[in-house]
Image (cartoon, rainbow, N blue to C red; front, side, top):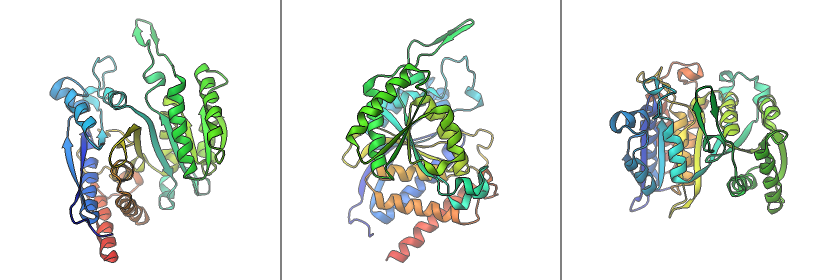
Length: 368
């Protein structure tokens, strides 16, 4: 594909955050800029404070200016938040409040986490190669309801309370998105709940059964979260799209990193209902945390951040060819023997980034 005569402009709210967030985000940003040079678009990066760095500068983990910048952008690219300096569980202001604030403030109700067992990472996974072989699934997690947002909540003396609350519209919108995604994949949907115990899960299951009539081409199964947690790592290849509530999705998607081989390659997209001129507005971030123990060493794996940027190109910026080119660059790294420490190697962040960029350049030369 040749570049456009006039580059297509996009605005991305750039939130590098804490720990290794700035390191991996910078790699993702440079890869997006390189893809833009090849495919004829240009990104204006609107850098803003979030998390611990925002607390230090403003006293708030999500300043109003940051939320405003995100709302005015075509998409948001987030690094990571948190670290030992802000880890007091009794603190009234914590970096993790950034995530809840962004999700609620931007209306991001669905988190998409693709999980693939790349053959080149067989040795990095704790699962036997024959168990993980062929696994390619998508976890769709409800993001703005459940225990993380329910009221009342609080802790007083020897008693604490959290409320698990869902409404029919909250469940229906994320379930409907999951069905739509299943149609574009292999046509199988697994809905995960705890309907044998929880009233909220009984409502969840009822809504799934109502929506399924609109998608006769999709086969549906219901699974209890505890048995599904076992099946996910013993039979991962049998799953296509999994849809579940907030807490269950948080836990299961981190468990699924064992299939991929490392959190360092796990990507995510958080989407809402807002459509822009280019696609569907969303926030894109690697699944891993801020990893303060390796921050500043230059050894963090940037592939999850680069892969999340590829999702941003596909979903929010309307640049599928550029997204696919970045994905092929990531594939080239995974097919090589170059590995960062999380995957058992010794390569640093910039070496891996350079390999992705080299793959982009080599592919561009071949296509001319």
